[in-house]
Length: 106
Image (cartoon, rainbow, N blue to C red; front, side):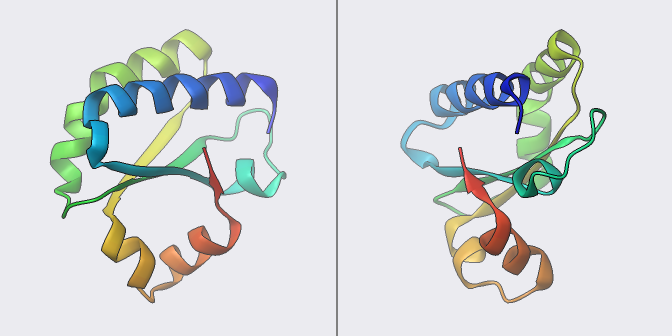
């Protein structure tokens, strides 16, 4: 993960903490950036884990304006996925297994 990605993730984390407060459990970087095999044009994949059940579509919309601004300002693409802490911990599907295995808490 390069310095630009670290700065973007820090800004995103700060925004999410302000928006969700105690509801935010964790932000997890996954995918090529977490594995260390990202290309210069690779996106930044983040899983945003909230303590309560999540309406993913509503949360994508809720965070869209800030995320778009962050992407344009830094010439990056941030891919957000939202989930609840229960789903992240106990879901047995491949996506969550991979994120739990390769993810980096931000």
